[in-house]
Length: 296
Image (cartoon, rainbow, N blue to C red; front, side, top):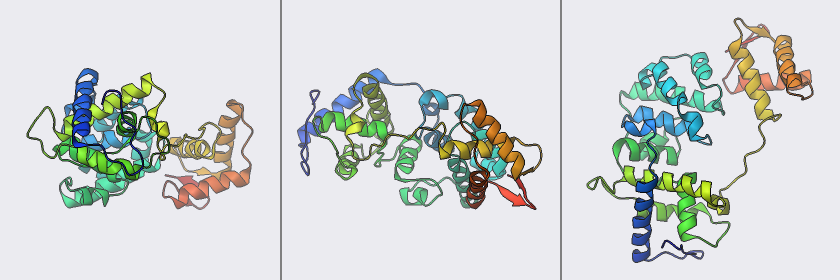
Protein backbone atom coordinates (compact mmCIF):
# COMPACT_ATOMS: atom_id res chain seq x y z
CA UNK A 1 0.00 0.00 0.00
CA UNK A 2 2.94 2.36 0.54
CA UNK A 3 3.51 2.16 -3.25
CA UNK A 4 -0.12 3.00 -3.87
CA UNK A 5 -2.86 1.48 -6.02
CA UNK A 6 -4.60 2.60 -9.16
CA UNK A 7 -8.25 1.66 -8.81
CA UNK A 8 -10.26 1.71 -12.00
CA UNK A 9 -13.79 3.15 -12.25
CA UNK A 10 -16.07 1.12 -10.00
CA UNK A 11 -13.17 -0.97 -8.67
CA UNK A 12 -12.96 -1.51 -4.91
CA UNK A 13 -9.81 -2.23 -2.87
CA UNK A 14 -9.68 -5.53 -1.03
CA UNK A 15 -10.11 -5.75 2.72
CA UNK A 16 -6.38 -6.44 3.04
CA UNK A 17 -5.51 -3.41 0.93
CA UNK A 18 -7.77 -1.20 3.02
CA UNK A 19 -6.22 -2.56 6.20
CA UNK A 20 -2.74 -1.72 4.86
CA UNK A 21 -3.96 1.73 3.88
CA UNK A 22 -5.45 2.33 7.31
CA UNK A 23 -2.26 1.28 9.07
CA UNK A 24 -0.10 3.44 6.80
CA UNK A 25 -2.25 6.54 7.38
CA UNK A 26 -2.19 6.13 11.16
CA UNK A 27 1.57 5.67 11.07
CA UNK A 28 2.05 8.82 8.98
CA UNK A 29 -0.40 10.71 11.15
CA UNK A 30 1.57 9.92 14.28
CA UNK A 31 4.79 11.13 12.62
CA UNK A 32 3.30 14.28 11.12
CA UNK A 33 0.86 15.34 13.86
CA UNK A 34 0.31 19.11 14.12
CA UNK A 35 -0.48 20.43 17.61
CA UNK A 36 -2.94 23.07 16.48
CA UNK A 37 -4.89 25.09 19.08
CA UNK A 38 -8.35 23.90 18.00
CA UNK A 39 -7.18 20.32 18.54
CA UNK A 40 -6.86 20.99 22.27
CA UNK A 41 -10.59 21.29 22.78
CA UNK A 42 -13.70 19.21 22.31
CA UNK A 43 -16.03 22.19 22.46
CA UNK A 44 -18.23 21.77 19.36
CA UNK A 45 -18.69 25.52 19.01
CA UNK A 46 -14.94 26.20 18.98
CA UNK A 47 -14.33 23.32 16.58
CA UNK A 48 -17.10 24.54 14.29
CA UNK A 49 -15.49 27.99 14.10
CA UNK A 50 -12.14 26.42 13.21
CA UNK A 51 -13.71 24.27 10.51
CA UNK A 52 -15.34 27.26 8.84
CA UNK A 53 -12.21 29.38 9.11
CA UNK A 54 -10.07 26.64 7.59
CA UNK A 55 -12.18 26.37 4.43
CA UNK A 56 -9.94 27.54 1.57
CA UNK A 57 -7.70 29.31 4.10
CA UNK A 58 -4.16 28.44 5.15
CA UNK A 59 -3.66 27.13 8.66
CA UNK A 60 -1.12 29.87 9.39
CA UNK A 61 -3.77 32.54 8.74
CA UNK A 62 -6.31 30.86 11.01
CA UNK A 63 -3.94 30.59 13.96
CA UNK A 64 -4.41 33.73 16.02
CA UNK A 65 -7.67 34.65 14.28
CA UNK A 66 -9.43 31.65 15.82
CA UNK A 67 -8.28 32.60 19.30
CA UNK A 68 -9.28 36.23 18.73
CA UNK A 69 -12.74 35.19 17.57
CA UNK A 70 -13.27 33.09 20.68
CA UNK A 71 -12.11 35.95 22.89
CA UNK A 72 -14.78 38.15 21.33
CA UNK A 73 -17.51 35.51 20.93
CA UNK A 74 -16.63 32.74 23.45
CA UNK A 75 -19.87 30.75 23.07
CA UNK A 76 -22.59 30.26 20.50
CA UNK A 77 -24.90 32.26 22.77
CA UNK A 78 -22.44 35.16 22.76
CA UNK A 79 -22.23 34.99 18.97
CA UNK A 80 -26.02 34.76 18.65
CA UNK A 81 -26.41 38.00 20.60
CA UNK A 82 -23.88 39.90 18.48
CA UNK A 83 -24.89 42.26 15.70
CA UNK A 84 -23.91 41.63 12.11
CA UNK A 85 -21.54 44.63 12.02
CA UNK A 86 -19.45 43.23 14.89
CA UNK A 87 -19.39 39.76 13.34
CA UNK A 88 -18.38 41.05 9.91
CA UNK A 89 -15.75 43.32 11.45
CA UNK A 90 -14.16 40.40 13.28
CA UNK A 91 -14.23 38.30 10.11
CA UNK A 92 -12.41 40.87 7.96
CA UNK A 93 -9.39 39.38 6.21
CA UNK A 94 -10.73 35.82 6.30
CA UNK A 95 -12.50 36.04 2.92
CA UNK A 96 -16.01 35.03 1.88
CA UNK A 97 -17.93 37.40 4.15
CA UNK A 98 -21.15 35.44 3.67
CA UNK A 99 -19.62 32.76 5.90
CA UNK A 100 -19.61 35.24 8.78
CA UNK A 101 -23.31 35.95 8.36
CA UNK A 102 -24.00 32.21 8.11
CA UNK A 103 -22.12 31.70 11.40
CA UNK A 104 -24.31 34.35 13.01
CA UNK A 105 -27.56 32.83 11.71
CA UNK A 106 -26.50 29.33 12.71
CA UNK A 107 -25.49 30.50 16.20
CA UNK A 108 -28.90 32.09 16.61
CA UNK A 109 -30.56 28.81 15.61
CA UNK A 110 -28.35 26.79 18.00
CA UNK A 111 -29.07 29.24 20.82
CA UNK A 112 -32.79 28.68 20.29
CA UNK A 113 -32.21 24.91 20.42
CA UNK A 114 -30.35 25.31 23.71
CA UNK A 115 -27.61 22.80 22.84
CA UNK A 116 -25.13 22.17 20.06
CA UNK A 117 -26.46 19.41 17.75
CA UNK A 118 -24.71 16.07 17.42
CA UNK A 119 -26.64 14.37 14.61
CA UNK A 120 -25.48 14.86 11.02
CA UNK A 121 -28.98 15.74 9.82
CA UNK A 122 -29.42 18.38 12.52
CA UNK A 123 -26.05 19.94 11.76
CA UNK A 124 -26.53 20.21 7.99
CA UNK A 125 -29.91 21.84 8.62
CA UNK A 126 -28.07 24.86 10.05
CA UNK A 127 -27.06 27.79 7.80
CA UNK A 128 -23.65 27.35 6.19
CA UNK A 129 -22.96 23.85 7.51
CA UNK A 130 -22.49 21.27 4.78
CA UNK A 131 -21.84 17.52 5.04
CA UNK A 132 -18.06 17.83 5.44
CA UNK A 133 -18.24 20.52 8.13
CA UNK A 134 -20.88 18.50 9.99
CA UNK A 135 -18.73 15.37 9.81
CA UNK A 136 -15.72 17.34 11.08
CA UNK A 137 -17.68 18.63 14.07
CA UNK A 138 -18.93 15.14 14.84
CA UNK A 139 -15.47 13.59 14.61
CA UNK A 140 -13.46 16.22 16.47
CA UNK A 141 -15.98 17.25 19.12
CA UNK A 142 -17.89 14.03 19.71
CA UNK A 143 -15.58 11.32 18.32
CA UNK A 144 -18.40 10.09 16.11
CA UNK A 145 -17.91 8.46 12.69
CA UNK A 146 -18.81 10.19 9.47
CA UNK A 147 -17.72 11.00 5.93
CA UNK A 148 -15.31 13.91 6.29
CA UNK A 149 -14.24 14.54 2.70
CA UNK A 150 -12.22 17.74 2.47
CA UNK A 151 -9.16 18.60 0.40
CA UNK A 152 -6.43 17.02 2.55
CA UNK A 153 -8.48 13.86 3.11
CA UNK A 154 -9.17 13.68 -0.63
CA UNK A 155 -5.43 14.09 -1.28
CA UNK A 156 -4.52 11.00 0.77
CA UNK A 157 -7.11 8.76 -0.87
CA UNK A 158 -6.08 9.87 -4.35
CA UNK A 159 -2.40 9.40 -3.55
CA UNK A 160 -2.81 5.94 -2.05
CA UNK A 161 -5.68 4.40 -4.01
CA UNK A 162 -5.85 6.26 -7.33
CA UNK A 163 -2.15 6.80 -8.02
CA UNK A 164 -2.30 6.96 -11.84
CA UNK A 165 -5.88 8.14 -12.43
CA UNK A 166 -7.15 11.61 -13.23
CA UNK A 167 -10.66 13.10 -13.05
CA UNK A 168 -11.63 10.90 -10.09
CA UNK A 169 -15.18 11.83 -9.00
CA UNK A 170 -16.12 12.20 -5.34
CA UNK A 171 -18.85 9.60 -5.76
CA UNK A 172 -16.06 6.99 -5.91
CA UNK A 173 -14.27 8.42 -2.88
CA UNK A 174 -17.26 8.91 -0.58
CA UNK A 175 -17.97 5.22 0.13
CA UNK A 176 -14.27 4.56 0.74
CA UNK A 177 -13.95 7.51 3.13
CA UNK A 178 -17.07 6.36 4.98
CA UNK A 179 -15.89 2.75 5.20
CA UNK A 180 -12.37 3.66 6.35
CA UNK A 181 -13.52 5.76 9.30
CA UNK A 182 -13.47 3.86 12.63
CA UNK A 183 -16.99 3.21 13.82
CA UNK A 184 -16.46 4.03 17.49
CA UNK A 185 -14.07 5.62 19.96
CA UNK A 186 -13.19 2.49 21.91
CA UNK A 187 -9.57 2.62 20.73
CA UNK A 188 -8.07 6.09 21.44
CA UNK A 189 -5.26 5.38 18.98
CA UNK A 190 -7.70 4.64 16.16
CA UNK A 191 -10.94 6.51 16.72
CA UNK A 192 -12.71 8.94 14.33
CA UNK A 193 -10.94 11.98 15.81
CA UNK A 194 -7.44 10.44 15.58
CA UNK A 195 -8.15 8.98 12.15
CA UNK A 196 -9.22 12.22 10.54
CA UNK A 197 -6.39 14.19 12.16
CA UNK A 198 -4.01 11.62 10.62
CA UNK A 199 -5.58 12.09 7.19
CA UNK A 200 -5.43 15.88 7.47
CA UNK A 201 -1.78 15.94 8.50
CA UNK A 202 -0.67 13.34 5.98
CA UNK A 203 -2.59 15.12 3.23
CA UNK A 204 -1.02 18.47 4.12
CA UNK A 205 2.41 16.81 3.99
CA UNK A 206 1.73 15.27 0.58
CA UNK A 207 0.65 18.60 -0.88
CA UNK A 208 3.89 20.18 0.36
CA UNK A 209 6.17 17.45 -0.93
CA UNK A 210 4.52 16.16 -4.13
CA UNK A 211 2.66 17.59 -7.10
CA UNK A 212 -0.71 18.08 -5.42
CA UNK A 213 -2.60 14.76 -5.80
CA UNK A 214 -5.93 16.53 -5.29
CA UNK A 215 -5.52 18.06 -8.75
CA UNK A 216 -6.48 14.66 -10.11
CA UNK A 217 -9.91 14.98 -8.50
CA UNK A 218 -12.89 15.97 -10.59
CA UNK A 219 -13.82 18.28 -7.71
CA UNK A 220 -10.55 20.20 -7.97
CA UNK A 221 -10.91 23.82 -9.03
CA UNK A 222 -8.29 26.53 -9.39
CA UNK A 223 -9.26 29.55 -7.32
CA UNK A 224 -9.63 32.63 -9.46
CA UNK A 225 -7.38 35.64 -8.93
CA UNK A 226 -8.71 37.78 -6.09
CA UNK A 227 -7.01 41.14 -6.68
CA UNK A 228 -8.97 43.17 -9.20
CA UNK A 229 -11.85 40.70 -9.24
CA UNK A 230 -15.53 41.38 -8.61
CA UNK A 231 -15.12 39.53 -5.30
CA UNK A 232 -12.28 41.84 -4.26
CA UNK A 233 -14.32 44.95 -5.05
CA UNK A 234 -17.28 43.58 -3.08
CA UNK A 235 -15.04 42.95 -0.10
CA UNK A 236 -13.55 46.44 -0.31
CA UNK A 237 -16.97 48.11 -0.49
CA UNK A 238 -18.07 46.16 2.56
CA UNK A 239 -14.87 47.14 4.40
CA UNK A 240 -15.48 50.79 3.57
CA UNK A 241 -19.03 50.74 4.92
CA UNK A 242 -17.95 48.75 7.97
CA UNK A 243 -15.16 51.19 8.78
CA UNK A 244 -17.27 54.32 8.47
CA UNK A 245 -18.24 56.17 11.65
CA UNK A 246 -21.54 57.15 10.06
CA UNK A 247 -23.71 56.15 7.12
CA UNK A 248 -22.17 56.94 3.74
CA UNK A 249 -23.79 58.25 0.55
CA UNK A 250 -23.06 56.35 -2.63
CA UNK A 251 -20.66 59.01 -3.85
CA UNK A 252 -18.42 58.69 -0.77
CA UNK A 253 -18.38 54.90 -1.10
CA UNK A 254 -17.35 55.29 -4.74
CA UNK A 255 -14.63 57.81 -3.84
CA UNK A 256 -13.19 55.53 -1.16
CA UNK A 257 -13.31 52.49 -3.43
CA UNK A 258 -11.60 54.30 -6.29
CA UNK A 259 -8.93 55.70 -3.99
CA UNK A 260 -8.14 52.10 -3.03
CA UNK A 261 -8.22 50.89 -6.64
CA UNK A 262 -5.99 53.70 -7.91
CA UNK A 263 -3.54 53.11 -5.05
CA UNK A 264 -3.33 49.48 -6.18
CA UNK A 265 -2.60 50.53 -9.76
CA UNK A 266 -6.05 49.59 -11.07
CA UNK A 267 -8.51 51.80 -13.01
CA UNK A 268 -11.40 53.49 -11.21
CA UNK A 269 -14.71 51.67 -10.92
CA UNK A 270 -17.54 53.31 -12.91
CA UNK A 271 -20.45 54.59 -10.82
CA UNK A 272 -22.96 52.09 -12.29
CA UNK A 273 -20.70 49.25 -11.15
CA UNK A 274 -20.38 50.77 -7.66
CA UNK A 275 -24.16 51.04 -7.48
CA UNK A 276 -24.49 47.42 -8.61
CA UNK A 277 -22.01 46.28 -5.94
CA UNK A 278 -23.95 48.12 -3.24
CA UNK A 279 -27.26 46.71 -4.45
CA UNK A 280 -25.79 43.21 -4.48
CA UNK A 281 -24.50 43.52 -0.91
CA UNK A 282 -27.85 44.94 0.20
CA UNK A 283 -29.77 42.08 -1.41
CA UNK A 284 -27.57 39.55 0.41
CA UNK A 285 -28.14 41.20 3.78
CA UNK A 286 -24.70 42.70 4.33
CA UNK A 287 -25.69 46.38 4.25
CA UNK A 288 -28.78 48.56 4.41
CA UNK A 289 -29.80 51.79 2.72
CA UNK A 290 -31.81 54.55 4.34
CA UNK A 291 -32.60 57.72 2.41
CA UNK A 292 -29.62 57.12 0.12
CA UNK A 293 -27.10 56.44 2.90
CA UNK A 294 -25.37 53.07 3.36
CA UNK A 295 -24.61 51.33 6.66
CA UNK A 296 -24.34 47.85 8.16
